[in-house]
Image (cartoon, rainbow, N blue to C red; front, side):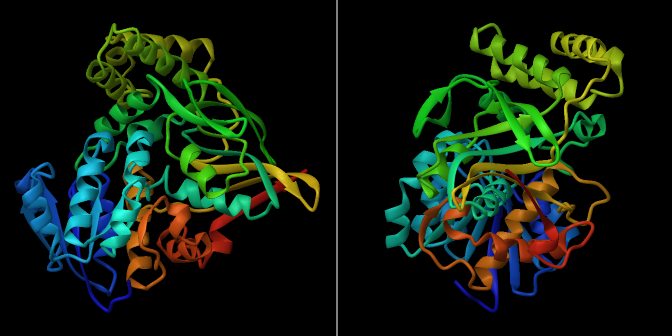
Amino acid sequence: MQADKIRVVALGGCGGMGQFAVRTAIDFDFVEEIVVADRDEQSARAFAERCGPKTRAIGLDVLDEAALVSALEGADVVMTTVGPYYRFGLPVLRAAIRAGCHYLDINDDWEPTLEMLELDEEARKAGVTAIIGMGASPGLSNLLAVKAMNELDKVDDLITGWGTGGHDEELAQGAGEGGTQRAANEHLIHQVTGKIRVRRDGAFRDATAFEEITVDYPGVGPVTTHTVGHPEPITLPLFRPEIRNSWNVMNMPPYLIEPLRWVAGRVDAGKMSIDQATDQLSDAFTTGGGDWKRLLLSSLGRRMFLHYMLASRKTIPYIAVLFAYAVGTKDGKPRKVGTRFTASPFGGMQHETMGSVTGVPLATALALFARGKIDRQGVFAPEGAIDPETFFDELAPLCTPQKKNAKELVEISISE
């Protein structure tokens, strides 16, 4: 689509992720109106009032299909940050297709990703473009991966990853206004328990999380990372079928990984519910570098403290908040390629948060819609419909420190 003015519905737009997408989008000249829709109508109205005259609010339960379709019928694009997506992704996409409304989300669950991709033909018949997983990981990670793969003639191994580097302040920042830190932690528990899907030896296979994967990132050296269940290892090999092995990994130090592994094991053994595990993880991560007495009140906190002390705050080499790493050949010679950012999408905030690095990319994709830079119809992961160079050119001025274009924003490191 290409339009001088567009109307947008932001489902969950007052939440910790959605607010960054909304605040970024209202500054775009082509946005005529953003409707902030949330089950908590009072919060939606309060947030919309703070955002100014371009925004208004409605109360909406996304599981009320008739009300949802009605809300979307007058809009050009819906941005949805309502999770978890294994519950809400498929019904919202179906409603968007029924309403003839283009669709953007930050889906980070691999199971509904597969289900939503199956709606491709239905979306094409309705003239709808849907891009699923356009946040940080997946989203930015996918497009970093495409940049890395573009440096190779043939790709054998592809890894997308994210991490904290063990910086306690990063763990405590949360997601910003609206507080979706707990929702993010629930997602993390979900994706390190049960089965995950990876690409191994040229086929998609079920696996378990926490498998150790060595990333020999150029200029950083061998880094031990741990697998987690995310959509990238599924969608990227569909984009480049020659990929033999693909994982999404966590680049975090042992004193975070080991307690997380313990709590995941408790859930898998039926000794702890996902809700209980989420409560412990939220409390532990929030107080991780501060109130140790409070942290020690939980079983998870005690284990985190023990690993923290045994490791003497030992950290592993830190690659980046988000990165991609591809191994393959160029001109018949072995080559390793790493891609990461030189700046971050803070969304006008003083520090980076989970909400900013997720919500700002979502709004950037909205800009590509309005400028006619996304012209395929159907259901896609980001790499299937978005040119990374075009996207990063659009994202670069929204970052801190501000960058001019994709070349300045994305650092490409190569070794043989």
